[in-house]
Image (cartoon, rainbow, N blue to C red):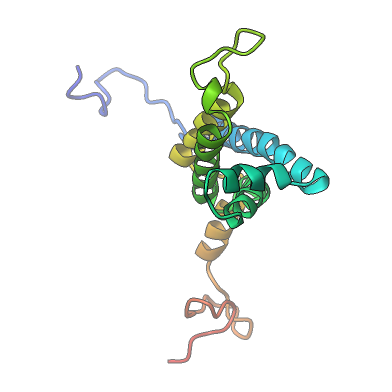
Length: 182
């Protein structure tokens, strides 16, 4: 029974099944929801710091004996990485930056709450934990079909047409639309 799982037995009815339809679509929508949701939540923190200042962030870094430029990098991470994740460009890299930023935030700012409960009975660093777990999932899953990365990849895979002859043209990478000279 298991050895012939990919073959049809006599008398069985073959059912055509397109594996790239519903399940794949839902998986890609799930990736979009995950990366956009985590990114939007993170972006709100970055935008708040842009509007109201991020001096307190710089102070955490300098009080820990670290250079203040790391604080500027943290702010950049809280804005640029979520924007990249929302559009789905370099999602794995952006998510890795978010994981790193949140680990540093927990170690520098929220260390006392690491093994504590908040006033509502939740984990003291549950928001940081949510960002870390969500970003780790985005690292593992990638951008999915509904992303700028996927669009660019599909666009590169399209055949190029020579405008003069209307036939497929051989092109060098980076010379889109220009026929390669033989």
